[in-house]
Length: 70
Image (cartoon, rainbow, N blue to C red):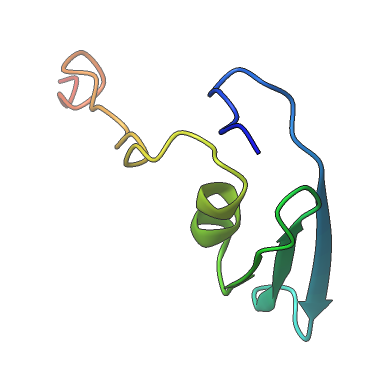
């Protein structure tokens, strides 16, 4: 079996279990390889399906809005 390239489409089965509005977990199964990976956050889910793993951007403060007008 050849190793897939980064740009090759992949198929996944995603099972999500949600208990509250803020808590969810589940499993991601790679259809081709059969590998199953658990996840407990959106970041872990995104990582399991091969998404980019960069840190979320922090909001930048606008120096014009942080000043008090007199």
